[in-house]
Every structure is written in structure tokens, then in C-alpha cells.
Image (cartoon, one colour):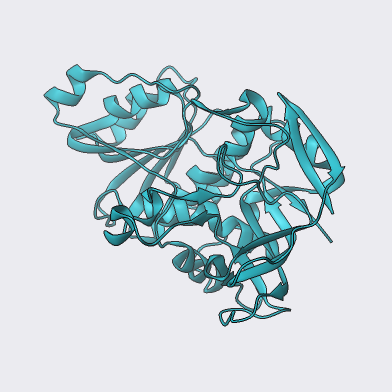
Length: 346
């Protein structure tokens, strides 16, 4: 089969490799139809890994995937050939202390598609995954929309781990990439009406306005924080950091009211960040780090299927597998108004 393989920093080639085969009970062979380029994929492309976890080349990126079931192992009952499925990229053991506590996203033995030291990714023609990682795509939903259910599930999980939201709850989202915009949708669906969104890219701010943000602004505006504080003089009870930038983490702590919660969903560059202990201590702030998602894929697919959220405008770029490198370069450079780039297998 054909696969996109990272072979070095900013180096990606389309190579012919052996196709996967069903080997174990419970295995499902999926022909990939759409796979999104995630921020973590860009970290792997630009930095050769995420933090201290470095890739071993060659490496297939991509974990936001949807496709068609081609074959199943004996005994598989959840899906059958011909079913359209979204692939949940995290495979947990179900037996460790974390799984027994319902914390499947911090499973001691987790294996994640396109994660260094764990599993190869989905930017190829076929993959084999366990049947429990296959979620049927509702009728009327495209493969592309189903693939975006993966980042939406992270946003839903982030919102669920934050605070109770209501129309009276002001929310700040720093970073309006796919995760930030999905968080906007999830926060509004959870009841928030006063959602403030910041980003440097005008196209992303316009998208945030279209999706219901009550306020948008750029961190390059020297009066941004003053404008937000004028609008919300008591400060924000919750801030979602969705861009992985040190300056956004600093800004988030300044925007929070005493007792507020900083939810860190973005993936920072490097393996260390810093926070103002003075502000954290004096205002008794909580910092919550989000690890992917936990049992939110089903709710994400339901929200899309029922029209509670419309994520289709987030998909701004579509390329065939052969042009995957061009898409990575576009996303890495924040070029051409890109929000979500999708690699398509016809």
C-alpha cells in the first residue's frame, strides 16, 4: 500500500510498504478515506517528536481518521465489512489501575496511533485496529466530518474537566486553531454564551465570530488584555489555553479571577513551561492539564450528527495522499488561512 512516511525533520515521502493484515481476534481492517493533520503531527514533522518523545524513522503520521471496514477477524460483532467508521486512536489495556478507575486516557499501557514509541499512524491506505476502536459513522456524515470528531472529542473532554458553564459564565479561549474552535463549539453547547477567543490569524478570528464568539482579538494588540478586563472586570473563571505558547499560559493566568481554572489543552513546544507562582498562589488558581480525551468520541459524533455543532467550516484544505507534504508545510507555516487540512484517499 501507499503511505506517507516522515523520514527526517520536515521530510515526508510517499512510499510503498507492506499492507497490514488481520492477525488477532477482534482485529478490523479499515481502508482510510480521510485523515486530518493535527497539531501533534506538526510537532512531529517540525521537531521530530513531542517534548522528550522522539520519533524513530520512518514514521507514519496521522491519527484523526475515518474510513470503510474492509475485513474483520472471526468473532468481531461490533462492525462488519462495508461499515463506515471513525477510528479512535487510543488503545487502552482495560486492566491497569488507571483503566479500572475509568481513566482510560492515562492507561499505563496505552498505545496511540501516530505516537512516538507506540504505534504508526493512519496517513496511509489501510490500517488494522481493534473493533472497540471503531465507531460507526452516522448516516449523512462525511468521512471528513467524522475525522474531525477526534479533535472535537478532546474539546468536549476539556470542557467537561473545566467548570460548570452557563450563559452567565465568561469563558476565554486562547488559540483559535482546530482545538480552540472545537472548544468554542463545546463550550457553547455546554451553555456558555460569553466566549472570548484570541488568535493572531485573522481568518481564524473570523471563523470564531461565525461560530458564536462574543469577542475576538489578537495577542499582538497591546490593549487586548485591557479590553477583555473592561468587558469582564471580575476576570474569567476559566481559561482554555489551546495554542501551546508560553505567552498564552502567562496571559491565561493574568486573565483568571481568584479561584479560577486554567485548562491547558494545547501542546507546548519543548518539555518544560513556566508559570507565575505569585499569581497562582495569591489567587489560588488551578491548572489542569488535558490528556487527549476520555469516552467523548460518541458524544462528539452525536453532536455533529444532530447539528448541535457544525465543524465542516473548519476543514479548509483537502489534498490527496500524494500531496501530503504540501499540506504539512501549509499547516506548519499557518499559511493560506488554513485551519484543518485533510488528506483524502478516494
